[in-house]
Length: 199
Image (cartoon, rainbow, N blue to C red; front, side):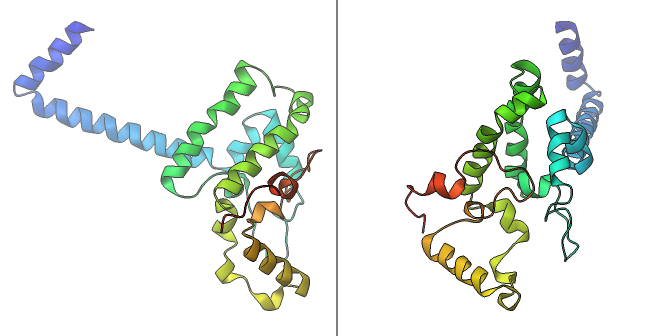
């Protein structure tokens, strides 16, 4: 190891310094491209569907849901709802997914469908809390209030959206289990009912 470092230092001191610089830049560019390519693939539905058996089960639940098939023909995939769209939050979310890898491969707490079902509420609760904390950021990436057409909403929906706005509610408090089986236990509204409004 030290011999290699000495050789690199010797090259850096002589005419080889430009070669070392170019090689370093090339390696850095390749590493950056590889990481970027993996990030794009890791956000794909193909990756989510094949990553582990939990995802296969969740994808079956998604099939035929309102986020899979709807009158507008706009389809939401796993990453649309579960991964931030901005670069820095996206990378941070990817780092946070190591806890899922840890739970599947190391502690094996969710490595069977039965274990996953036993933890479904806990896992859903974690997503609901995350979405409450970021004001349903991933929902709002597609569903922006400014682009909602009040003429296409029912009177009931208009009243509920206005009530939610006045009470400082966020999307996930009313719209949950849209693409996945609802777990047993309280929903987000019951969970967050005792918390003060954010606005």
